Image (cartoon, rainbow, N blue to C red; front, side):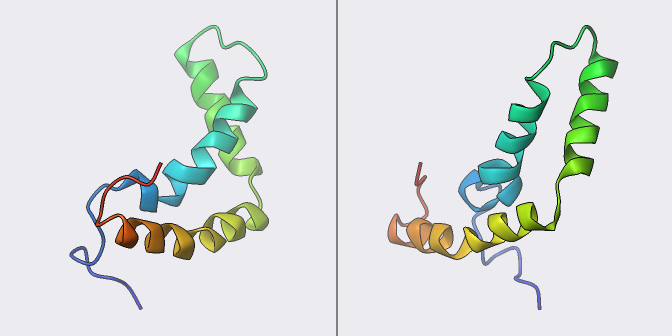
Length: 80
């Protein structure tokens, strides 16, 4: 079952698991070392995503319902 695009606010970072959870983990991983060029940074980002396990996705999804409720309570405004 999928929600239609009308159901959620478009491009809401508060309701996008990549924005509110996964990117911060990737950023933490890639900041462990300096990257001399874009190719090095891109490779580090790809490796960080590849290293994420099922528990990472599970945790991001567990946070989704409370975040959606907070956005509803905030009348669609930012919750951060």
